[in-house]
Length: 623
Figure 1 (tube, rainbow, N blue to C red):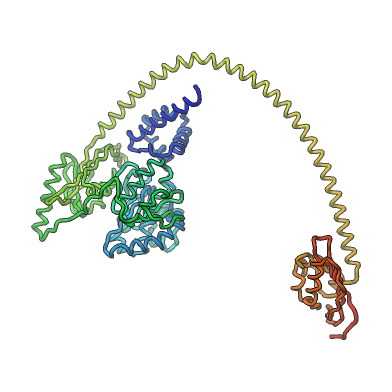
Figure 2: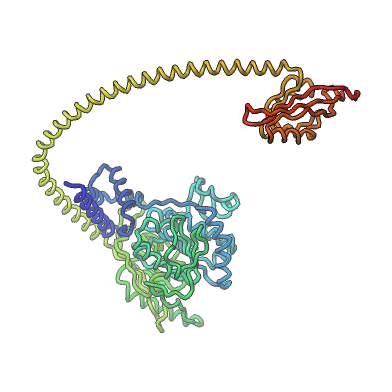
């Protein structure tokens, strides 16, 4: 088979596998870049020892746990508290003050962390707003949605538990303020935790959360192709209010959306939705209104109306939540199925386990209410401690009361566990039979090709023998070359040793000459730093060589006023000619005053510099 048809076949098999993942588990990866997506899937296939996409699909159908390992390989859950500190600092000091200034003191602040992974980003947002507004105001005004497609990561996010190393980006003050010790881990403070809602959401398929003031989606767009990125940006544009902020990752930017987004900081990838742009493809639902009921009688009538509507719409396990998020009805099926009681009626829905297990229902309730349409989740898995998995089809249905105003949301659960397991088993058996038939059919073809492969192997072995013989000859030649090179290195080493001895002898000779000269001899380089200070200079001025070596000559403090020599020395350096002797009044190391005769000569042997010869002349009196 040629390479081109094989590549086309591989691409087709990859697309079939992606379609299977979408249909079987609801994970739609068709918008991801094929290069990185294929590489990660092949990495997981290599880990389990499978080469063909079709064989790996068989493994997924036979082993449900393999889905989790594959999704963990594909979905790179890299996150941390206040990741990329510079970007968060800009957001905190520049963006948040502008956002709060635009809103009224009582307005709700809606924030969405899309692709939140294990929740650190959503909790970072909660900390940031709490530091700006204070804990109490944050609890009443701020609502943060954290969404991802990875259910395992969302479970970690909902727990709010992190090891100590995950909190290292926080100062000790912030850590103690927002986290509590929980065994060997730290848990996010419970009151702020209730303002963060986590739920499964696919940004390529699901309707976006609307009326947002801030949308954070960092380093998620870069994994999608251009078409998918365009669709996601359309959803983000709809989700944001006018002048709402979009916070992307370092590897992402909006280069072709200048008509819809203003650049707040290109370096930090923060953008602002421009005013006056029509949002597509979704239209926000009318604002959630609540009818005014006065007194106890109206409240009873309202509850009776809601109860009647829910009872009519829920044939199986069902419960109803009013517009304030309070549970107003739980039918008998729901109490038996999920361990609820009549005491749970009147409690906030978010306090019940059913609000987030088997799926995050709070965000679905908000979406269904705003869009005024029924939402369905098929095959949601619910697994308790030590229990077999159960599967439910869930319907979230907004209920409308008198005057067309939202009254409540009805949630029904249909147990499809038996049907789901039976369907999966039938599918597995059918595919096993198909696989067995294909294996039998391919066995005959494999036997026919075995003789050809054996003959080809014999020819390859003969060729390999000739190549080995040639390689052996090349190695012998290389050995001879290495031996010759070794001899040359030994010769060079001997020459280097001789040259080193000659240099040592020349250095000793020069040191001896300088030492034997009674006069003071000082050598300066072209920067007028001291390079040599002979014995005569030590005896005359009382400074040791190690005190003056590589020191600026005109910065030394001894008995000779060196500044009177600067012009003579600089003239000698620039002209390259010996200057006339200069007599200067000086004081030697013993404190005796005398006239010092200084002769300045160019030092051509060291890339510039001068040689100063200093001799003691007539005495001018003792000090």
